[in-house]
Length: 236
Ligand SMILES: Nc1ncnc2c1ncn2[C@@H]1O[C@H](COP(=O)(O)OP(=O)(O)OP(=O)(O)O)[C@@H](O)[C@H]1O
Ligand SMILES: [Mg+2]
Image (cartoon, rainbow, N blue to C red; front, top):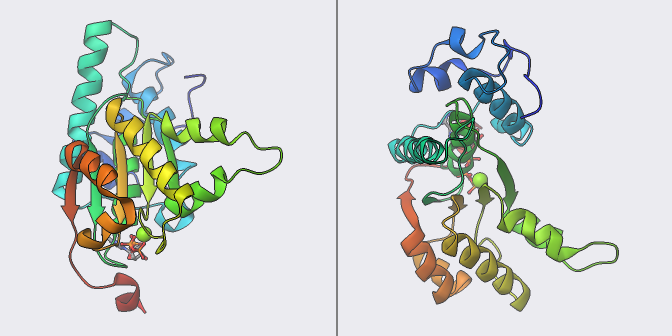
């Protein structure tokens, strides 16, 4: 926490996020010069999170009750850990993971970014790393001038990680299998909260990710199936 971001973040459509957590806009906009005040933690966290949200999902609001419950758990765990340690702010570090499953266009990515925004305004510090699985593999491909292990650790050790479109590659390679296993295994062992989405049918997902990854996901994640039509086609 280095600075207090501006209040009245216009155009960010914060009202539904604050209302869902019973928070007032006045609270979020308080001019309190204590950087550790929960409203300033919320403002800072929201400001940092918003930089990671793609333009298309900038106003996303989560609708699934399971996502709200997941956020409540992360917030409660963060506050409990703060009480135990007596730190100046509550911060998300450990927690359960969640896997959104559903066909193309049902709204998985929308829900995921909505969840990141909703968690951000809660008043606990939450730091995200976001990627699609395909972008992750591309970023980690060994190439000149890149320390792929350092890059990998950025995702492996992220406080909160969003991996969108897990299992999207039709033909897993040894490289993608190794990344999937090392990433999921580490986050499983360290109980690091990870939000994942996949549009692959659960039976096919076993073939794409392998038994050992699926076994860990089964224990660490709540699976949330999403049903419905392709919203993009409906909109068109
Ligand atoms: N609850 C919602 N309210 C309004 N718009 C929504 C909602 N959910 C999704 N959308 C819109 O519907 C479209 C599809 O949503 P999204 O991109 O989240 O789908 P997806 O399930 O991630 O699809 P894919 O599997 O292809 O990645 C997007 O334009 C998104 O903004
Ligand atoms: Mg998507």
